[in-house]
Image 1 (tube, rainbow, N blue to C red):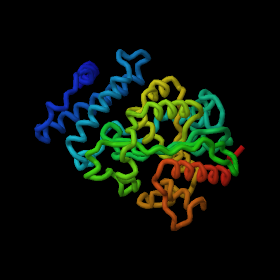
Image 2: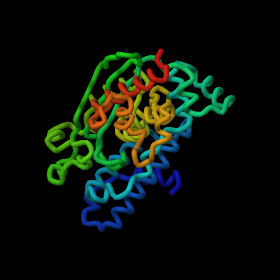
Image 3: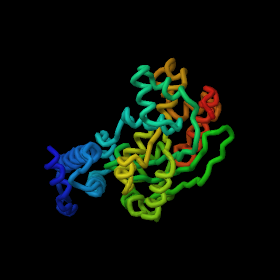
Image 4: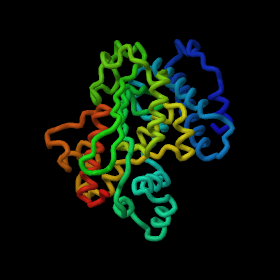
Length: 321
């Protein structure tokens, strides 16, 4: 598939009734075409200063793919992962994040990297962190943003100072299609969200007031998330206006998992199986969680845990202003 094919595919009128009764191979082929088209369109949108399409075409195709996945059932959705979930933020995103964290220009940070061949640890540790940031965490029904739904979103604003108190905390449950009343909320074994939590709630993609409020807060300060590439990938395909603001530099993600790996020397000496950079393990090492306490896996709770653990790490490294 080339870009022209992707635009043509995304522009095709979707009539789900034509897919009823189709065999699994046909549905898998349609899903594969959708996700390949999405991948090409997202790349073109960010690489081309003047793409020939608006990002609403991309979001519409993601909605279409979600409806297709509902027909296929939860087992096929979780069997593998879409390529439209990024594994990490780009190097350019990391430079912008460090600059925002330290209130420096991106050019100065980039020059430092080029001149000193600086590691991430040197970058994050070169200047104190300061200012206010938005923390956000989402819970979902899938690892793939073009297949599943957001069922919970939590956010708050925090200043990076010792003893900081959260500002404007929000936690919202979001609905999913009625078919999950019988099958259960996917990934509930992780986030413990059940049908009673989301029943009669407005789906994220239909909640215009929530979308408007969230987009505004994400533009107000750089945002932090533990594995921010996850939130970034999901918001890209669920929150109208996010991709455009991201491209324009009005939204800046910062990955606290990346900060943990860069600043905490313990990570280098722990086994991969121990997941040393996970929020839970990091919080336990910094005394924010007790050794027998677990991460809640709920938006606002995990956002607050992330901030408190980050501040503890920065304090330990003498990186608080």
